[in-house]
Image (tube, rainbow, N blue to C red; front, side, top):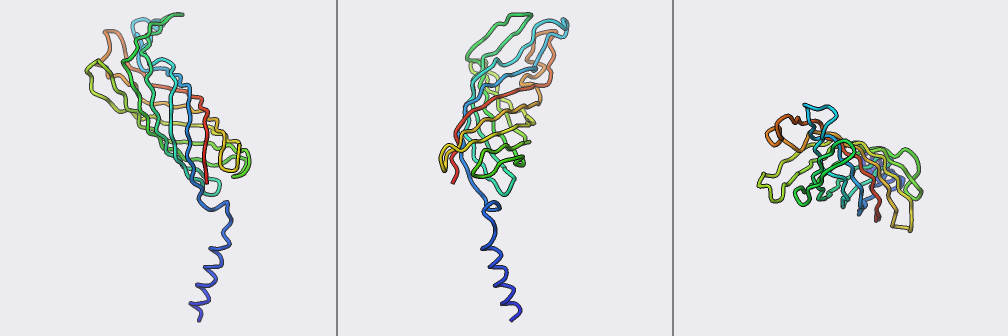
Length: 202
């Protein structure tokens, strides 16, 4: 009898769990402007040239899940930045040599707002960045990035939201030391992106 009463009580509690604690799944499509910094520099001339991917537009598709105030998301993104040699006030671009594919995982809490309101999440995570070198003959290589992001969302309809995301990341250079001309050194890679997109959630 006591066991039956306990089962009934547990069933009642499960039925009464508030909606905010139930998982919400969402899909996001977004485009972003990505600014790259670091990667390599001329060690013989501190004010000299730097070698890095150029600023590029990136396209991404993400899937995420919210439970209570917490969000976890998985995002895949692709871009084809030019290779930039940047000197004092000028730069040289070489096109069609780089391709970047990023697979990222992030988690973070909601800072304000709610499921049916404008909201802001702070996210931390890590990404695997695969670099390919079209026409250069070098094999693809993988680099790990650590990321921090602020992500805001605004309801447009019952199931569609507008999304704005500011993200910073840092990791190791896409170059190996053997790739670089004499006098150049690798340095840590940094990237900042500003993304806008649409999100569907059930």
